[in-house]
Amino acid sequence: MNVLGVILARGGSMGLRGKHLLPLLGRPVLSYTLDHARAARSLTRVVVSSDCQDIRKLAISEGFEAIARPPELATSEASVQDVMLHALETVEAGLSLNDLAQAGATECDSLSRYPGGGQGGGFLASCFESWDSEQRPMPPPQPSPGVPGEGEMPVIAHGHFAYDGITPSPLYPGERAGVRGGSGSCATLRTAPHPNPLPRVRGRGDLSEVPGAFRADAVVVLYGNVPVREGGVIDRAVRLLAESGCDSVRSFCPVGKWHPAWMARLRDDRVLPLHAGSIHRRQDLEPLFLHDGAVVAVSRESMLRGRATPDDPHAFFGVDRRGIETGAGDTVEIDQLRDLYWAEAVLRDRAGENTRMAI
Image (tube, rainbow, N blue to C red; front, side):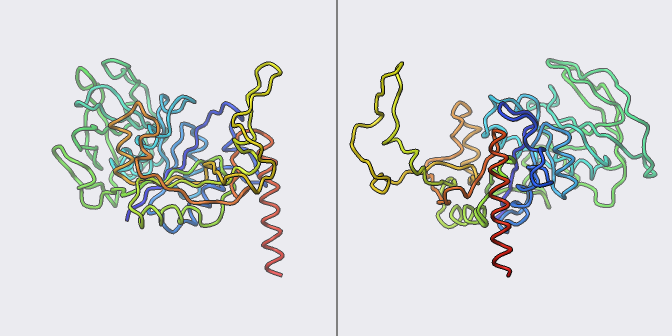
């Protein structure tokens, strides 16, 4: 089973600005999730989805693929479902920044749709550096006229690779091609030779059918602001997904004393219990659980439900939803500054336990 892991790491944050790159025991917060993904034996391929260039550079420097998330999917209102669908489609179309680098760019800066280029539009990837046919760096890219049509986007004449979202015809090493917008060709581009060229494909169809192309049977959501996870939790979720044939698996931790039976509404100074009752011992409370953000594993079919029902942001969870239990405190998600301190305390405690066990 091919399992695509997608690490979500948006540059902005409503609570703690730049949280993915904040230092935690001398390392960026995101690096810990990269470690968790690297240790997961069930993940076939892992990409980092981000609108932040610095985050993508970090991911690539640690040996991971990076996807440039478009601005409309990099807001606080954007759903995880839409971001995951974008990542899945991008990877399966062979359009991660690493894939595009194979076509001649040493490093790419952004990837986004442009109007025209067939029914579904196309993609543009602007790169920091390109190579000519003799493997020499090309001059810095110069701006050229924008793509005609609704929602114009600047085009760099010597720094783009184009791909039509409907017709699989990417630029190939050594080829020239016009980038077409809503009303015609507006730029001529060239890629450089590469020892492992992309497969030549003509006509319409599903790129997953191309020999050597990647097709995900399941996807795993990993939040980049979760530096503390229980060991093996990713593999546990994927194992349950595969063995049960369910639609999705999420990790859940016990709510403990933050239980609905003990919650109330406050109307001015009046206390209105959420549930009537007289349970006074925590041990007598019904066990309830909360998704802790450690991992979400989803089947391919369930993920694609989100495309059919975009108005339901949780459609990709499917109908048959399962869960795995984690312990209280096994997962730490960074949303506020105090979460960073708590994560540091947990990591130090774990390091101390490992030291004691080694002795």
